[in-house]
Each structure stands twice: as structure tokens, then as C-alpha cells.
Figure 1: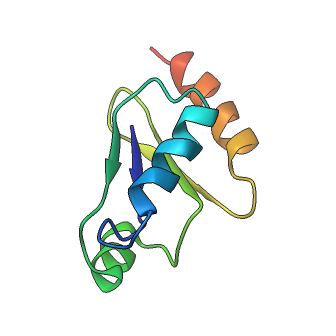
Figure 2 (figure 1 turned 30 degrees about the vertical axis):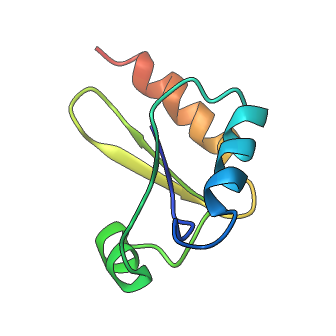
Length: 84
């Protein structure tokens, strides 16, 4: 699942999000968060995107941030899938 933090009321935001996800062939649920920046910064303990959370079967998670969090996140996915 992906959650965009772009303001859905901003002109062109939804189209930009859809373009980004289409280019990456995102075949999963995609949402645009309709909450204030203060809310999601506190709730998700982050300053801003990009940020990736990877959850295992027990609900434990790891967070990855930075300019390109995806390579490290993919390693966690492989690790979590190997756990039983």
C-alpha cells in the first residue's frame, strides 16, 4: 500500500500522484492522505517523504527514510518474507 502526503486539494496533485505510481507499475492500494502536515508528522514520526515502512507478519516494522529508501526497504521485505 502507498500513502501520498500531497495535498489532495492542490491543483494537479492527484494527477501527479497517479502518474508517479503508474510509472512505477504500483499494483497495490494507493491512497492520498487528507490530514494536516502536523498530524502525519506526529503520527508517523517523520518529517516528510520519502519514507517507507515495511511490516512483517507479526506487525513489527522498520522505517526507511532518505533520498532513496527503496534498496534498503527491499532488503527488509526479503528478510521479513523469509521469517516464519
